[in-house]
Length: 142
Image 1 (spheres, rainbow, N blue to C red):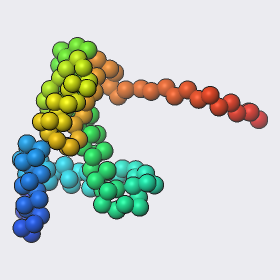
Image 2: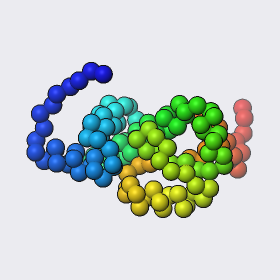
Image 3: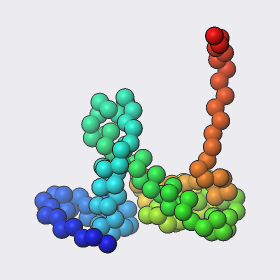
């Protein structure tokens, strides 16, 4: 793996160290996730666009969930099916917990990881999940 050496201010380093401790992951992973989130193009809603830092935080949160979803989808089908009908929680590219009840799992994950984005998804659903939207609006065709 290529190596990059950075010089950081004490404030930045302290912030990274605190985030790594809060997320229970090494500083290197926090930096890598932050860089991926910063460099990966994502759509920003109009509501977020006016908020500057809140838009960046929203982008980072969405990017982290996308990373976790990709990690879940890359697991062998046998591993995914081993969780049956449970919901699984994926954090730092690993399944960290599972439960039949989504709310119970959510509460445990929130208590364990705080406000860090963690993917919670049904283990038995197709990946990626498909949605069909039905609209009551009728339009005239020409």
